[in-house]
Image (tube, rainbow, N blue to C red; front, side, top):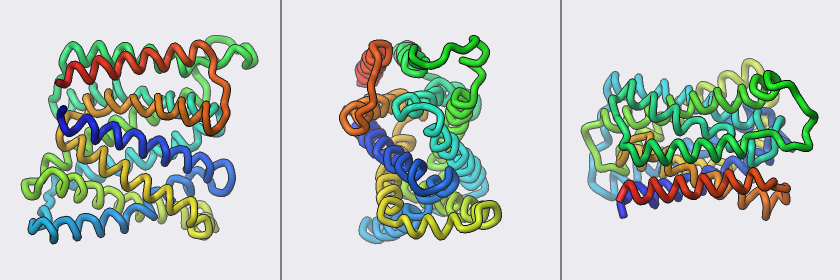
Length: 303
């Protein structure tokens, strides 16, 4: 089995857990910006220590990043930061399962962005898998029948859909940006290049969003530090998940990684049913089954 497959599954699980913790912060303590910043603040120093320790233990020199690296990292970091804020804001409009599902438009968008920017094409079996997964996403994203009936324009053009589409575009840009940044480094093994790219990205995100909060949301930084018990877990799960994603992006094209990463929706569904006790419809269960079929095709097509 190619290494990128188990690494991606691990990353998807940790990302799901991190979003669950961020959801708790969003609905109980922090603003959208604060819940997003908590992720970067508490993971940045951990990643930096891992990079330094791993380079020393493996007797490798730290990579020497150039202008191409920083262009990819900054664009990816800012896009991921805004995408995360969109997902956290989405929690106020739909339940946890649908909220995470709406952002999964990133799978198709990542394939398109990767083709345009990096020239990375994908095979027909993976295209078919992405298409099947997208149908599952549509089923999961459809509003429950118990909601108030709305005209079709209101069902498509609404705040939740806007946040979902925006996060999909932005996550696609960040995935391609991070892969481009990692591939631009000419020193270090796969893990060192992935971790170094992650350290640079989280540093940019911590400083940028921290400055924004200090300017626009007075007192929010204090609340983030006060919520250190949960925020620290957000940072830890973010670090573990991001290390997985960045390593997978270094090993395989972003579209393949994001396509397999749809397994996060299965984890989300299980969390929603067994932890949050949210009710799921037959349509949502059908969507999950299609996503499972999509993951199976990706797995077979990658062997």
